[in-house]
Amino acid sequence: METVKQLARPLYAVALLAVTALTACSGPASGSAPSAPETSTTAAGSAAPTASASAASGQYGGYASAAEACDAISTQATGASLLPLSAAQGKTAELEQKKAELAETAQRVPEALKADFARFNEVALAGLSDQSVYSKGEFEAAVAPVTGWLSANCH
Image 1 (tube, helix red, strand yellow):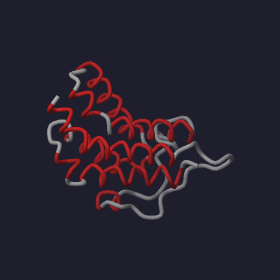
Image 2: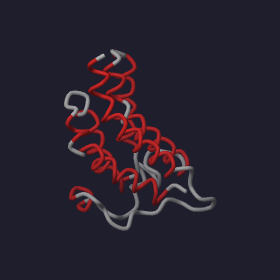
Image 3: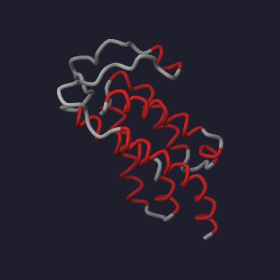
Image 4: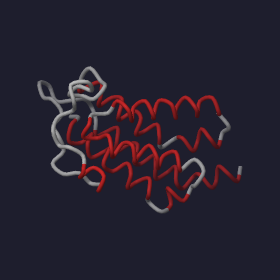
């Protein structure tokens, strides 16, 4: 019970972020393709090339369409916020599956989001063993570029 109380505050903040992520992505605007973000919000992202993704990864990363990319990225951004809850409940198999799905998404995101999503993945996993990731605002800072990409590219 004590663990649940310790998780309540960060999970509340994460739930608010999840709602923001979900409302930011309702699918791409009809007839439009995702655009590259105007500016990157991280130092790593600023070093990334701004040209379109390579032919191997396609315009939407490893996804067939903008809608598929938006749905997967939004789902994983939201799901990552709930990883500590799965850990606290002792759902080891579920937790491992969610971690694998998050890692797969990190590999498939469009090139413009790769560095930011990799950082988000790293911080989300760190939050499993260090709850200060949430109280110090690290999770919010890591998810911000992802939700920003969703806002800019998924309408």
